[in-house]
Image (cartoon, rainbow, N blue to C red; front, side, top):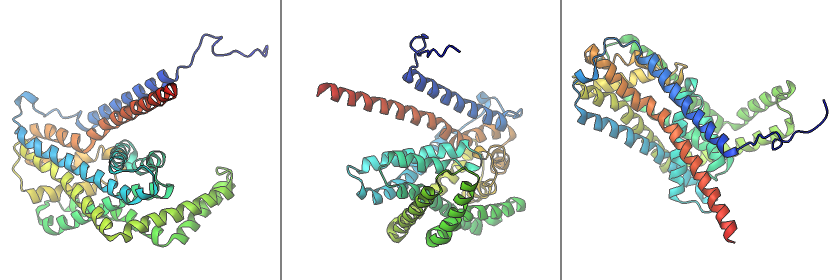
Length: 371
């Protein structure tokens, strides 16, 4: 080696940061297209009995209430997060309802996106916490507690809907195995609310467990600064507990989040009924709703992105009222509202965020030049 330093400019290679970002966005979009294509092929690739779309009679006007169920459900979920953010925003300067809605909408939609591309939906809440810490302006404790509390109230909302449906509509579910599996699935829905409640109201044992884990990680040299990590954990757990308790103690806010969660789950579970009707299916609303909730509960613990592979298989029970040629198209429409639309929205939101940041940098540069 001659020891001569070769500069990137001398070698004729120039690193263009802007082009690099655009290339990463392109790869990100391409990855999402690949995920959609692979999932669609796995779910619908073997549907040889499906009729040609030109031969399918569809009552298109009934797709409208299905779409409205989705839109209203998402708006309700965003509003749930927005009211929690508003409760905390007094600690932040320049925070208003518009900014709360913006942060809430991106937190919800990107959370749904990561839920649907990661196995067992493990990516949603970690990303929501990361996004809120970086963009909400709230404290770390509030940025952690809001996504977790949003998830927990969502699961409580599903439990309420499921218990009512199973109580009133159990005789209408003509499948004992499905009903048994659905009750088993509800245990998984109840698991995290119980764990988070224990962590909130019994913080000392929770902190002790986390500290023991950090000490173990320090011994195997994964955690470098044990003292700093322990202090950080203690502070963040205390702040998180205070934030959750604040939401719970604000009884009106707590009841609102539960109510919105019930509405969200009820609306999302109503979509298959309208899709069935659109394709000429003859079914009762309560029977369809109860079966849909049972299926959603049964596939909850399936560790695949978006429950792919299990959802379409078990949902054939819901769409069995249709002829075999129509099932494919009805399933495709339902999966669009329950899965694919989130994968499509992810890159759109990221692209918007990219151009928004670019615009902010341009405005800052213009201000500096103007001064």
